[in-house]
Image (cartoon, rainbow, N blue to C red; front, top):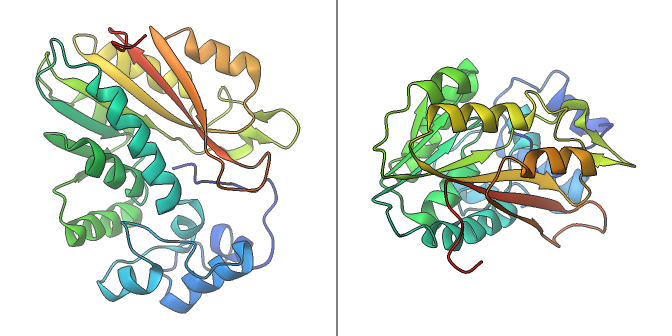
Length: 265
């Protein structure tokens, strides 16, 4: 998962959580709150599953250091879910059932919020990392929404996904950004790991009989050619920016449909 506001250069406690000795450690509550306080001035910044850190920690939810830095917090994940739900509702003709898929589940928080807003028949995420998979599976079980997390990469997961041909499949795409984010040109969707268009193309191929709705995590500033290359794959698209961070550091979302066009357009 890309996370909400990745920093091109991390420092101090951020660096310890993302790259250093705390990267693969399960954090205690004080460490989660310290990250929020030192990085964002808010000890409750890492609110996930609809709960503040003190509340989710008390229920038994646990995060690694790197997941704490990379996860999408509630404020952003909720907004994603609120935009995905009405778009999905416009695909009603010829659709019987909804399936939500997250190829890079990470903490599963965005999948959690999309599921809350969309209420699909099935929600499934794929996670290749052994430790993240075990923690996320346990965390989502604690939260009780019936979300599945499968221990495999997105390629095998998508290829083996069994859905009826008349289901609308909602695919949330948020691969690691790595060096794809530049302070000047913004997010280059061609340089994520893997490239966003590669994930979209695979989903289009293996789910060619389904109507598809893609929700792609983005940034306030996106490299223009990479955005054009992506949106050419869609029958309809929209780009939303969420004003929840300082100017030019806000998260965004690209919505795109394949096999249908929203009824209101």
